[in-house]
Amino acid sequence: MKLKLITTYLCLITFYGYSQDTPSALNLQEAIDFALENNRQAKNAGRNIEAARQQKWETTSQGLPQIDAKIDYQNWLKQQVSLIPAEFGGGTPGEFSEVTFGTQQTMNATATLNQLIFDGSYLVGLKAAQIYLDISENAKEKTDLEVRKSVIEAYGNVLLANETIAILERNKSVLEKNVEETTKIYANGLEEAESVEQLLITLSSIESALNNANRLSGVAKQLLNLTLGIDVYSNITLTDNLESLTATNIELSLLSFEENIENNIDYKIAMNDKKSAETLLKLEQVKFLPSINGFINGGYTGNADKFNFVRSDQKWFGSSLVGVSMNIPIFSSMGRSAATQRAKINLEIANDDLTETEQKIQLEIASAKSDYQFSIEEYQNKVRNLELAERIEAKNQTKFFEGIASSFELRQAQTQLYSSQQDYLQAMVDVINKKAVLETVLNTINN
Image 1 (cartoon, helix red, strand yellow):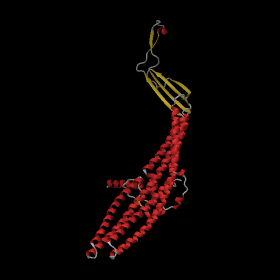
Image 2 (cartoon, helix red, strand yellow; image 1 turned 90 degrees about the vertical axis):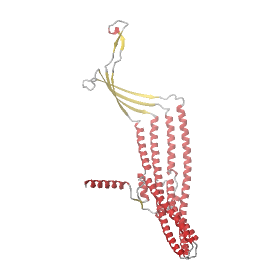
Image 3 (cartoon, one colour; image 1 turned 135 degrees about the horizontal axis):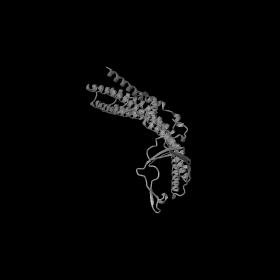
């Protein structure tokens, strides 16, 4: 009994923890917000920003005081023998005496403080680290924009699949009734076999389309889950519907939105690339300047024939040193000059890339506005076409069962209706997606 209670408790904890991570229902805005926090690409982009911050501090720390400590221990397994004139010790002139200098064991402990006084490369490196952080933040912004657009598309595709299935099931139900009624009429000799066959052909097409829609629905849900950053087999209820989303996404003010190319994320990235090229050029230029470093160190040395360094009576001899060093670049066989020229060429390339990016963005904005306006017009057109197709199909239904219209005419009307239904659904999705594209280009979300 106790084991069962523990198992049940663990299952409840597991379920609770899982339910906290994976929502059960989401509207579109909630799905976007959730994805920006949990999408794997968005999370990695955030991690890259943190890595860039750490890189910036790593660069900054190189110009701050650096302290290193060092301990050396030496034990002569066989001490080196030196020869000195024997006469120094009262021996025979011309002969040499064998002597050893120092103790068998030595220990040195030193601490050194190094300080960069001047280095042009360091100053440029600080600026480069900030640019690298800006680039990482730009990448995060671009990733978030793409994730937002992907969520909108994936969310719309799931709604499209659901609406398609619902419509196809209604069409199938109507066709099955038509087949049943027509079969009875045919059995009474009041209708030709071709009428039943025409309806069966249409019914077969609808059934095939319904089976395909069900399969695509599963794929669309998995793609949405992947975009959200959750397990692909999770089951989430979408609380928005296609018609309401379409209505809220018809925003004509976007078509007259004041364009500011500097808000576009691709422009920001191109501008940072230019700044990066300028910084690299400065880096090559300052390599012609000298660098100055200062240091101060202090240490103690102990000597003994046995390992007595931990004893209190061990004698330690202190020493200290302060100094400044200057490194002056003089001649590099034109290597630094070549590197500077290469950096200038890269800067020219970055300038041209920025100009081309500006022009591309202008075209993208114009194209996105045109596509969005066209999608709205197409949606309004498809609404009217669907209403017409429904009336035509209803009239042909009546005419067919009254014996006025042929089965071929009814099938044409039904096929036209089914096509209009799909066009209508696709038109709604296009409005939602084209608005997302325009908002991404204009970057109205982050500005």
